Image (tube, rainbow, N blue to C red; front, side):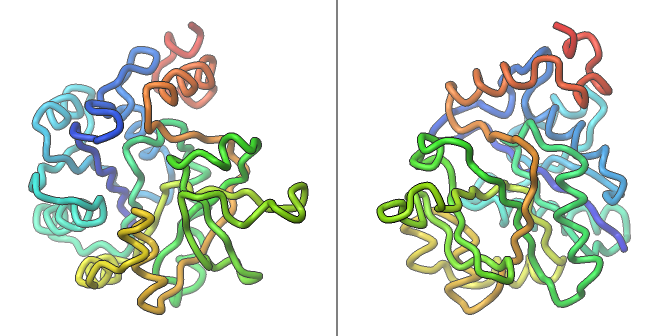
Length: 261
């Protein structure tokens, strides 16, 4: 099985411009995502997909791989698919699974990626997987930057929202507060099929790509990760991640001096 990881990243984030190159203990955020992703034994190749030459130059400067893509992409799945096809042309090998790891997930671990890919290796009927994690605080649950997910008894997604769902009105203490973690493996052909589907009303309202699949009648398998992980959407998130990653054992394997600082 040929599994590649592709990390879409661009400088023009509306909430935090330039965040892929924001420094975290001496390495740009996108560099952390790249270094940690390529540690996963199930991933044969790791690339960053970007429309920004400065991100590409940075990755090459730290020994990474990058693919330049069009600047017109509005969705990270489109950027990922363009990079996937470019990688296939360059290598002459067809990919089976593409793991899209968002460039603002600097706390990602190899175990998280492996947990997301394993169900697809066991069951050929699974076409896309999302990781999910529990949220520890109501503040995080109510943060519109965090995408919440509600799942059924079979661990398939029922709905994604930036609002705090399910409701805490009646049984606040028993409500599962789960967030989407943007480690998303696609089967190669399904990624192309997904991008060919028209955008859907709820996808636009919530600004959550996965709703396109649900609104078209498809299924998204969710996999729980016990990892305590945070994405970076704002400068405040960046400060939190810098604090949480201080002394990080995984970081010590690729950035020894910073891990002890």
